[in-house]
Length: 185
Image (tube, rainbow, N blue to C red; front, side):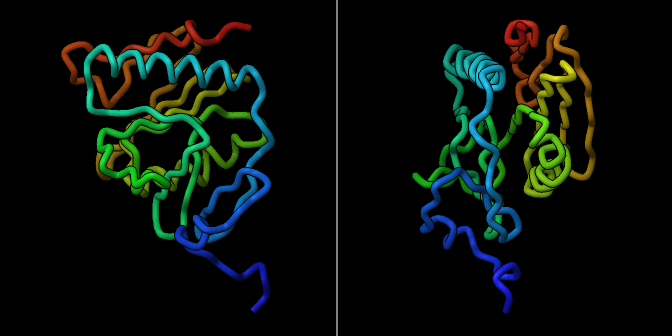
């Protein structure tokens, strides 16, 4: 069997040591891009802060995490979303978040946009993620995918818009993220 045909499991992946950040997608090890740029980190940090502040203010059960943190979507897929929210902390075993988080946010870059809007979008939807945001700093837009069973709703926002987080829309006080608060040139 040729080396390129070898597939590994999440458990095998867990025991491996890497010099660079990697993900496991459908049994294949995928090297991640080099460290993100400062705009990416600013956007990620600001969104994380908005979500964390909301959860703390409302004494919510959900928890927010930022990369690098491993999410095991299946026995052969482990990803590291930029940000994710889980409303079931029991899914965390110390190494992985096991199964689909409730909400995933990826900040796109030219080197990751194709994967984030293609393969990862499919993986997240298939695994049961309820809400997926793709934040595109170059186009100054946010694509929001809401997955309700077999149905999907896609919403497109500019960085001038306020966005109501889907997993909190039915709350007495929904989480509103103002994109203009975290995007500055």
